[in-house]
Length: 456
Image (cartoon, rainbow, N blue to C red; front, side, top):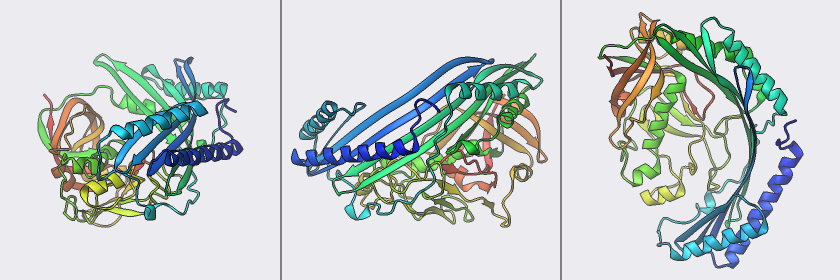
C-alpha cells in the first residue's frame, strides 16, 4: 500500500477529528463576538509518478492539510487560513480572521447561506475508492503504459507516462449547526508521445481519470490510443481561410459548455460582465437541446450532497428546450442579484448535456456525428485564451482533421476558429452520444453549423 494512503478506518477517524476541530473553532469565534462563522478543513494525500523512456523521472508523495475560517461581525467579513492544524496555528488563524473583519467595509450581501437551505440528507455517492498502489507498482504501471505506446511504428519519442493516486477528506461546518463531511478519490493515468517525419514533429496524448482504479482502461489500450492519436497527426496541413461546419470532439466540446457556465454564473452577472446578462427565460440554444445538473450521480466527477456553503444540491435544469432556465449562483451572488442560491457555491455539479439533434430520434455515435458533419472541420485541440465572456467573441488556435463526405481526410494544424458564442450556441446542430465521462461537464461531441476558419 502507498505510504501516503488514507485507509478506510483512518478516513472516518480523520473526518471526526476535522469535524470536532471545526465545531470548536466556530464556538470560539462566536465567543470572540462573531455573529456568524464557517470553517472548511481538509486533508489530501497523493502519489504521482512520472516515467519517461522507461526511466523514472519523478516520484512525488503528498499529504497536505488545509484549514480556512470566515467570520462575520454583522455584515463585516474576515477570512484567514493555514496549512497547519496545530492549536497555535488555529488560534492565530482565528485571531487574524476576527482582526480582518474589524477593518472591512460592510457588505449587505455578506453572510452564511440561509439556514433553511442546509443539506439534511447525506447519501453515499460512491466517491471513495482508495487505490492501494505503492511506488514500485506505480512505476511499473507507468512503464507498461509507455511501452505500449512506444511499440507502435512511427513513434519516435515520448514525453512520458504519469500515474496519479489522490484521496481527499473535507469537512464544512458553520454556525447554523451544519456539519458536512465528504471523502473522495481521484486517480489518473496519462501518456504523451511524439511522432516525426520529414515535415516535422507531432505530439499528442491520452489520459484516463476515475474515482475507482478498477474503472481504468487497460495500460495497453491507453498506450495504443495515445499512439494512434499521435500518428494520425503526422503530415498535418494548413487550410485556406473559409467558413464551414465545425465538430468539436467530446473532450474539447466540454470547454464550450464551460464557457456557458461562466457566462451564467453569479460573479459575472452581478459585475455585468457577461454576454448572457438578463437572459434567464430567453432562448439561447436550439429548442431540442436540454442541459441538466445532476449532483447525485453515483461515482460522478462532480457529485456532492451539498455545495461549498452547505446548501443542499438537487437535480436542476439549466437549459430547457433551448431556454436558459436559471443562473448558477452562490448565496452571495444570489443576494447581489436579488435571487436565491442555486446550490452552486464552489461550482457546478455534474452538468449533463443531453445528446440529440433537431431531427429527433436516436443520438449519433462519433461515426454518426462525422457523417452528420459531412464536409467540414473536426477540432481535437484548441489553444490560447481567446474567449471573451463579456462580448461572447470566440477566437482560438486549433488543430484537428478535415472531414470530407463523413470520413476523415487529413490532419490540419496552425488554424484559427472564430465566431461569437451566442451564434455558436444557437447554431448547435447535434450533440453526440459519445459522452466523455472524465469530467463534471458531461457532453458528447458538439456540431456547430458554421464558423470562420482562418488559415493560409
